[in-house]
Each structure stands twice: as C-alpha cells, then as structure tokens.
Image (cartoon, rainbow, N blue to C red; front, side, top):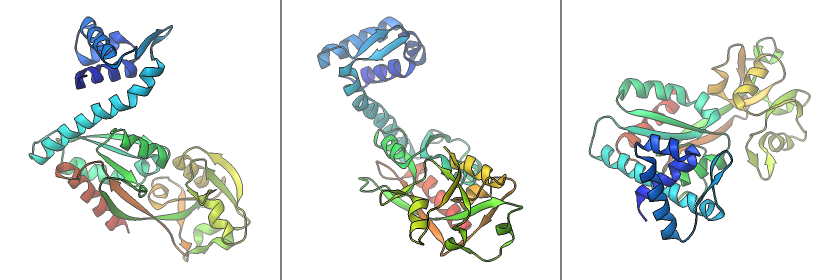
Length: 294
C-alpha cells in the first residue's frame, strides 16, 4: 500500500464524500475511487461504505484509519522537519494545545512569532483535555504540543516554566482590594465557578482535592465547560474561580488575587521528533515569554 492511497482514504473520511475529497486533492473522482479500491484489495476487505448521508467507515475501516492518519501526518511532519533543518524559508508549523493556554499563555507568543517569522504559517489545534491533547500528538496532528508535562512521553519534552494559578473575582468583590495573598481556608464559605474540564488529582477534581487538604468542600455556584467562560462569569460576580493568571488578564473587570501558598503548574513543549529548526525556535520563544511573565 502507498502513502498516496492512505492520503486518499483520510481525505474521503474527512470530507465524507468522494466528490469533495477529489476536489480537495485536485484529482479526478475516478482516479480517487481506483486508488481506494486498490487499497481495499491489498488489505483484504472494504474500508468504506456508502451511507444515506455520505460515506462512512466499515468496521475494518475504523480499525485501519488511525494507522493511516498517523502515516499521513507523520509524512507531513517529516517534510516540515526536513525543510526546517535545511533552513528553508516559509513553510508551516502545527501547534497543539489546550483551550486554556490558547486564550491565556499563547497569544503573546504567537504575536511575537508573527513579527519574527512572518513567512512561517502557524496552525493552532485546540483541545479541551490533556488526554485529547496527548491523543492528537500521538496521531501526528501537530509538530509541537504545549501543555502540562505528558507522563512517559517517548519524545523530547522541554519545560517552559511554571504557570501561576490565581483566584479570579469581580472588581466589586471584597477580595479585589487585597494586596496580600489569600489563604484557601479563608474561602471556605465562598461559592465557586467550576470548569467541567478541571484537571484531576488522585482521582478527584483538582479544586476538590486542594480544598480537602484544608478540611472543607468547595461550594459550587455554576458549572461551565471552558475556563475562559468561567473567568468571565467570575468577573461578572457569579462566583470566584481558580484560573491561570494569563487568562484573568484577558477579561475586562476580572481581578486576580494570588494564593498563599502559591499555586503553580508546570507547562511544557513536547514533540514526537527532535525539536529543531523553526520548531526549536518556537519552543525557545515560548520559554522566553514564560520567563518574562514569571
């Protein structure tokens, strides 16, 4: 089987149509169908089936697709790495990260990158959980992952620094006037805005675990899906929220209050292959921004 055949299969699955896939690949539909049939003969069964609303995968196709996606994306990553190592101008770089980092830590990095490397196009892939981020990186979706340190990652991992977690509240809240850090025990009677995608520690949601260390359970005022929404709710006075400091700085009316002892979380850049060329430059730029913000 050829890489081209796998590229054709991935395109049909993504487009859910032979016609749209052929257009996106700039080939004729007959040539596309011929290559898919040749691939099916080689693997020994049908990979695709026509559905009332497009094209879908057979059970054999669902088993085959992840391997085809990895091969196709790895080939693209290898081409980009080779061009970067050769010092080629232009090109592109794919970055995978969490939504919270995409709206918090990364904007100043991307702005600086645009000024320094205007000919290198960046593609940002956002995920809601660390599990989804790792899965995307394992499937070769991006060249670099940015997020908490991935456990037992087989490729290079570079520490970018620690991200500070603060309490975010509204400008009219009594906490907003504090100049000294607040102790978590002082917040036992406060209602929190919680994010459903909150990290888990020892099988518990992170805030539940942190408050349990001080002998209380946090009161919940509202549950949201995204951390950026939670911060906006806190700024509006719905409740207080624990969030990364960069996110708090992006929302008007939000006031960040530091915690004692300080809450910090390491962030890293990681990849499936050696970080070199423009990929290495991007990681160094992330580290510089984190250092400047610390």
